[in-house]
Length: 79
Image (tube, rainbow, N blue to C red; front, side, top):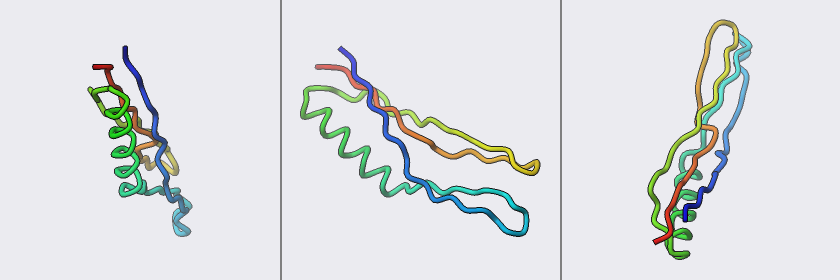
C-alpha cells in the first residue's frame, strides 16, 4: 500500500515598483518543519518514506521569468 501527501508552501509575494515584476520567496524553514512533521507521522503510522519531490510553478512577466516551489509531494510505502 502506498500513500502520498501534499504540502503547499507558504510564500511571500511582492511587486517591484521600478519594473512592475512580481517576485515570491518560499518560507523554507516552515516547509522543512512541515516535511519533518509529516514524515514522522507517516513513520508512526507504519509507512516508510520513499520519495520527496518538489512541484514548481512559474511566471513570465515583462519578458522575465521565475520558478518557485509551490508544493512538495511525499510518497510512502506501508511496511
